[in-house]
Each structure stands twice: as C-alpha cells, then as structure tokens.
Length: 456
Image 1: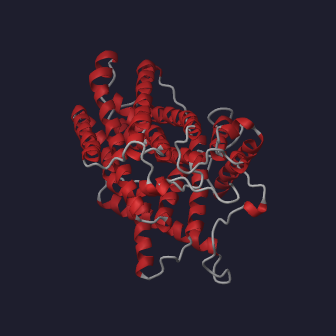
Image 2: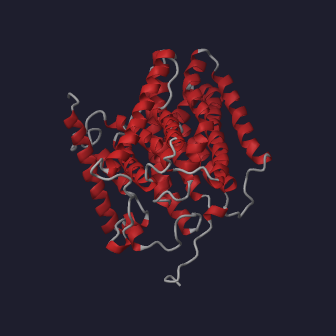
Image 3: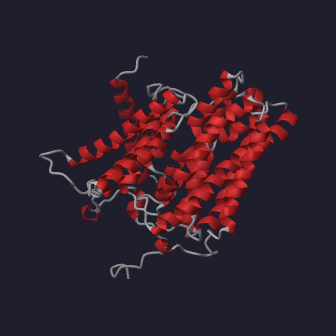
C-alpha cells in the first residue's frame, strides 16, 4: 500500500488512541497501578497484538518502525536546550561513561568470543553467530539492520533475521524484567526520585485535583508573534533536520560511515545552545517546555517501538539461540545488580534500570524503563548519559562499522579480544581512578527531600 500523509495520520491516530486506553487501564486496573506500567508501554503491547504481525485488526503502515529513529532524535536534540552542565552532572557523566562503555564493549567481546570458541565448535554455527546477541541486545533494531544487512550482503543469509530476532527477544526481556526490577527497587528504597509511599496520582497516572496540576512550561514569546509551543517545536525540529543534512553530507564524503541520527542531533543541539549563549540568549527557550516536548516524543517512541516488533523464528538455530539469549540476560543481570550499585552509589536504581533497558534492547527501551522509576526525569540519568555519549559515541559507531568488516576479513576472534581489552581498561580506569562512590554513599544531589510542614 502506498505511504501517504494519511498513512501517518492513521499510525499516529491509532497509537494515540491506544495510549489513552493505556492511561485508562492505569487509572482503573490495580495490576497496572502496582507495576506502574506507563501508558506508552501498554499502548505498544496492545498495538503489537492487534497490529499486522499478529491479529491484523489495526492497519498500521509498514513504516511504523522508522518513526522511532526520528523520535529518539527529537529526544536527544532537546537535551542540550534543557540540561545543565553543573559539577554533579559532570561527575555522574564520568561514571555513566565508564559503566556504559564497559557494558557495551564487554557484551560485544564476551559473545563474539563465545560464538567463536563455544557455539561454533559445539553446534557448528558461523563464527559471527555470537555477535548477533550484542547486535540485537545492546545495539537494538537499528544495529541489527546495519550489521545484519552488511553481513547478509557478504553471503551470511540468516544474519538479518537472527539480528532482528535477538532485538525482539531483548526488547521483551527488557520490558518484563524491567517492570519486575523497578517494582522491587522502589519497595526496597533504591531510588532517589520516588517516595517510599506512592501517592494516588502517581499510581493512577492522573492528577484529579486541578490545584495540584503543575505547569508544563512557560511562554517565552507573545502569541501575536509566534505561539510559544510552535517556536520550541520548530527549533527542535530544525535541530533534527540539520543533523539529518549533516549526516547526508558525511555519508556522501565517507560512504562507509554511518552516524546515528540521534547522536548527530545531540551534537547539533549543543552547537545550537552554544549559539544562543553566544548571542546572550541562553533562556530563549523554556526548559520545562522543551522537556514536555521531549517527554511526548519519548511516549510515542516507546509505543511505536514496541508495536513495530516483528517476531522471527529461526528453526535451524533454535537451541543455540535459546542458550545465547539466556547467557545474554545473565550478563545484563550482572551489570544491573552487581556493577550498577558499585558505580552509582546507594540510590542506583534509575541508572541501573536505564542500563538494563539499554543493555537488553537499546537506548529507547532504557528511557522507557527509566520513566517508570523517574517519571519526571529528575534523577539526572538522561543528562548524564547525554554528556557521557560524547565519549561513548566512537565505540558505538565504531563497532557498527568494524564488526561486519572484521567478519568478512576473518578477524572475528581478534575483534572479540580487542573489545575485551577495551572493556577491561574502561572499567579499570573507574576502579583504580577512584571514581566509584563509597559503599552506602548517597550522592549529594540525590538526598531525599525534607518533609514539608504539611506532611509532618
């Protein structure tokens, strides 16, 4: 079917309706309140079941999976216009960089080597088979398409299917495990932004009292000139557009280089904020309004991402695939429950859950799970990740480019050993550089707020 603007209307209209359904379920059904399931996750799961891949009751277009690339770019384009680079963010970003890079490179290293030295000798799989775990888990659907497509072009017929299967399983593991872990962590007091006893509006997802409803932003322009929301949306959209155009120029000059749109959007956003500061207009945009736009984009990103999952069964690889996925989940659990508390201190859950979602299903899912324990994104996790991404980006982009080249050149095992060395060095720098907080430490910017007079 031809894709038209009305196809976009149908896709957005259906997913919006499902988010309303998700919000009603959150308000009315205790199960959804207990697990604090965001409406966007509910909408995505319902969309997956009712969509073209399962019951075929909702006629989503075949392009709903591409919306996530633009929406995640909107989220990262918004960050520089709303974030602050104070001391606590820089300190947290340092540890976030070590944690993220170590987890990312370690996953690639471990499963490349398992593929070469365990799966290939025992089950006769290809040397690149183990690589499909990080391609789908920490890489996500975008990396699965990039690496799988490159390998398939070189004769690895099943690479794309295995990559997408890995991304699908990782996404499901991220959601199910993430909901369980966030509920456990909040009961145990492992969060910095959530109260010990959740108020009704947080559990139900709806603020009943008008006087308790916060403002979602402040106007920076007179509507007679331009509607404030139009200005904010316009600048963020321009940022993403410029990032897309810059990526196009880079691809024309260096055809082998592929930079994620969200990464370039973040860089262009930093430049944009730098220009505003140079013009002495650092508050030209309202941070709350920018965060509102980013939050809305995140909700749609989550819903569309889950609804666009395409389950793929690869019968010839069933047993090794099951073992591969089990080992992958164990690896991610190790980083969640052992590494995260040591890297982020006593109130580690927000960053740990974000890392779990990313380690199993890419950054977008990490953001989805983060919003369960940090609905207003006050923990600073995304700010820290945004700053840390500047130092992490070369590793992510590099692995996407180098991995298929290494396989084609017969250097798969070598890439695994090099990745392992990098992971150990990055994690070792944090340990021996004394970056890690003392056990039981609560970061100064995360101490629980004192109760108000009304509460006492």
